[in-house]
View 1 (tube, rainbow, N blue to C red):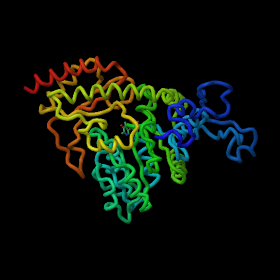
View 2 (view 1 turned 180 degrees about the vertical axis):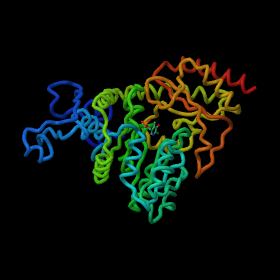
View 3 (view 1 turned 60 degrees about the horizontal axis):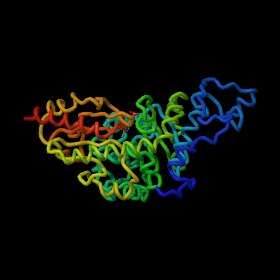
View 4 (view 1 turned 60 degrees about the vertical axis):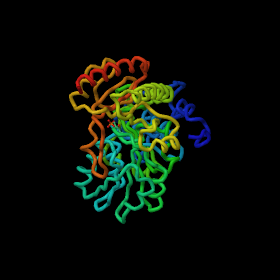
Length: 398
Ligand SMILES: *Cc1c(COP(=O)(O)O)cnc(C)c1O
């Protein structure tokens, strides 16, 4: 992003100042943890006015306290053009609540075929039950999305790069085509965060983050967020109030604490992941490296055009071999954990199988796929560990 959007501060500076200008801090650097369910009013008249004091805004714990508001404000300040941010108890909760805010029975949703699997599941389960139809589309469709927009289309959902397979989408072209037809765009921006891809600047209406990943950054909190342009923000807030969604002040505190070091951590994730990815690309046991910053990745040119950097998550396609050979690689790794999620300081390896998830496009590959999250360890140690893993893979593959 350019440095003069929004506040005029560079994004790295904004990470430090964002959300820290509220009241009631009494000089404390980090907005403290305000725990509350009941808020006490001074009079019946004050209770009826709907807020305790016009300047403190407190009403009831479900509506949050200065701890959650400060985090929401910080995320809003990181997305130039945003009217506000709603926090959710997980990334999936954010995605489902955003879609429920925008869609009604009879409407149609266009969902990217490379979406995070639980996002697909929301479409094929909850939304279908409510009479909302989904059409899945090719992640590389670009401006061609216009041909899929019909009279009933209300939302185009994007995720860039795609989960598991990392196709980088032409977000500005898709957003422009949707806006021309009055269709709302929602982007799952978890991989890049607003630091590497300010979504609203690129024409998106609502940017969703699984804060669980890089915002929290330490693998110890579940949280989601949606940051929206004016008009949509109010809809999201109303739906969140109806559904009774809230996050705990303790979790909001941890997320805000993680946020302050986002730029530092992402730089290290980027550097380590690039070193590991470039090394993997040279290995004969690896057919392809699906990392947006490497030329084998679909949409690599779009990544170069639109993103200001890369994070630490990518996949490799192995050269032949079966599930057992892949397991031999992963099971013996010392420095990579085997588990879901990512975005913490530690490295992870996960077997993933995109083929069964696709409906609009076919997934074809030379062998099984491993998704890697590169933490902030020294990449030389990670490369040595993966080198031993590829040897095990080769012995098992025969
Ligand atoms: C993990 C993830 C989510 C969901 O976040 P949770 O907090 O685990 O519910 C959504 N989108 C993407 C791309 C993710 O990787």
